[in-house]
Length: 457
Image: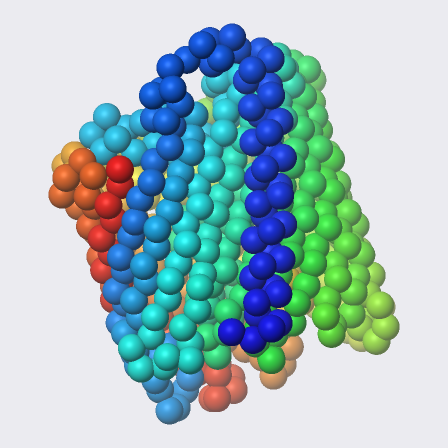
């Protein structure tokens, strides 16, 4: 392992563990101070909050570097021991902890999951590396109106495309940036926030995000993001409400121009009834770069509506127009739209999403910047029984960041999981993805089959 890679690995883990240690220390102090029941709990109840596990994964990939020619196929083995500590309840059928919810019912809580990844390539042994992934979700509510939260995500991987971990992302949604040399990268996202409710639906919040991205590829670059975001929603009466959202971002890059960004959104919402509401909003952004990159502004007025067809089915529709005005050069404009449909029933969950207009790709492997963009994404999962579930997903993306850089990316995948025993889970994922680019050298197609066995204590 090279010195730079060792330094990146050690520093990222150290930073993450320091954050975790402080959060655990603070929450432990709160538990002792405000909950005598925790102090008097038996040790076996404390130990029951820990859940060690190990996963063995085998992957066949027919194009590990996503190349148009000279394709390299390989079989990848990943051994991943991990441990989870959680104050959340466990599922009755599997004994696993449930996923953290957006709102905390308990006064305080902690969910910490860390997994080490020992990655071995059958042919390309120089690609072997040590990966890891970790997630942290913690919250504390001194009273029903005030809640403090902390979220942290750590990922060290060589996946060509990364999952989108943003709050509004759908399951299976990926970031646009793609790397084609199977380089190891580390991403750490630290997000503390505070929320205050001063009415039934009146909320003020302050969110902060610090993101560090490190990539070993020669064609990619390291970057850091500092992001602060105050928001307020005020409901004047049962039908009328106003939301104001502002964010300030400082982006630092290894080679590209650094920037600062101001972004503001104002939305007025009218509620016709408990199931249907309509809104109109105005979005403004100014992104200022260090020379020689060109500053630009974005203006985007839209209207939309949200409707709940049933307790399990809801939809949204939003449309408008955008203008991107650079300090030098011609204006880029077009239609903007965002449509979605989500159903969560007892056995089946599905989501449809159509987004178009533009996106901004920063802090990724490519850092494309402002990009005209369209995406369609569909996911479905169905519980065949208490132990068996199946699912699938398909997506299509079209991106144009400049005349020479155009991509049409589509993919499809199916998956299944089986809880063979209370402590043993099996899963299978099969997927295919293709990119048809304007530059033929960037074309690729990829088949992947992944089989996992997980043993959970």
